[in-house]
Image (tube, rainbow, N blue to C red; front, side, top):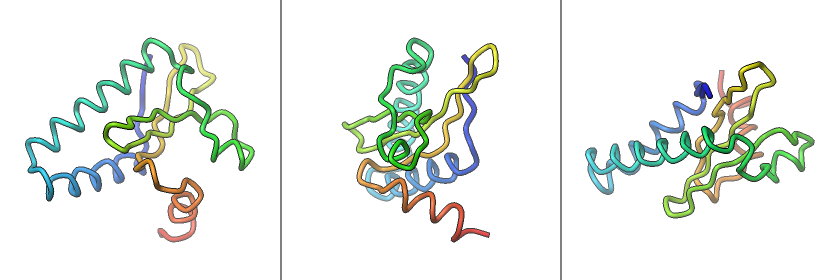
Length: 113
C-alpha cells in the first residue's frame, strides 16, 4: 500500500520533532518519530481500515477518516483511505492526543494564508 503524507502532516510532524528535540535531544526525538511512523505504516500495510473511525471527524459528517493512536507517545495520526486501485492512504494530520480536531481544521483553513 502506498502512503502519502500531506503538507499539513509534515508541518505538524516537524513541529513535534522540534518540541521533543528541546526535551530529549535531536537523536532521541528522531528515533521516537521514526519508530512511530514505522508502527503507523506497518498497521496500514496489514490492516488499512483497522484503526478506529475518527469520532471527531464523524461528528462533522466525515466518516471515512481514521485515526491511528500511539497512546504511549500521546500522538494520533488522522488518515484517509483512497478509492483508487490499488488502495492507498493519505496521512493528513499529526496531532497530540489532546488536540481538538475541529480547532486544527479551523487553524488550517481559516488562520493560514
